[in-house]
Image (cartoon, rainbow, N blue to C red; front, side):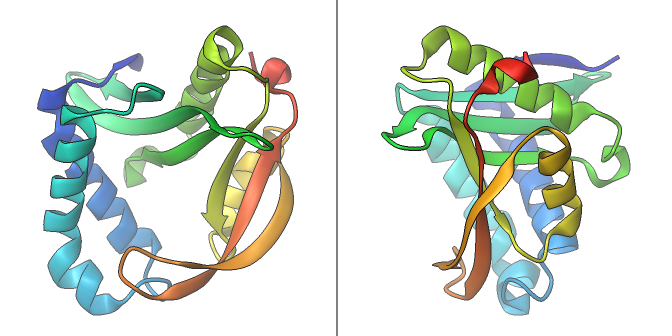
Length: 173
């Protein structure tokens, strides 16, 4: 049974490992192979250690646990944008458990946090245009592709990226 809970600093290693694994599996052809093969592990480890050690006061990181292992995580920034609302900065589920409802569970949990803490009921996220599975999942939850632009990636490459928005997250709760 999946249990959601707030992330703790001690979770940063498991979160970083899951994040790096998903990027290697999903972002081939989007990010640089050298980065994915040689740099992503340490870069994600450092990023998550910093992010959980000194979190922004509007940051809420939720982990999905299955049998005491982290199998998913979601990083939400409340009131991140005055127009688009709160921002899902990261949402990842272990490759073997994708399409099982864990991602949907974390998005709904984020919507609940937004309804309790945010100034508006709007939410958004960025997803690579070529990540069709994720785009289909967000659309099935009522998100719409507001725009597609070229954005810089953490490895220095540029990719077409879609901003998916929810104008009212209440339907997710």
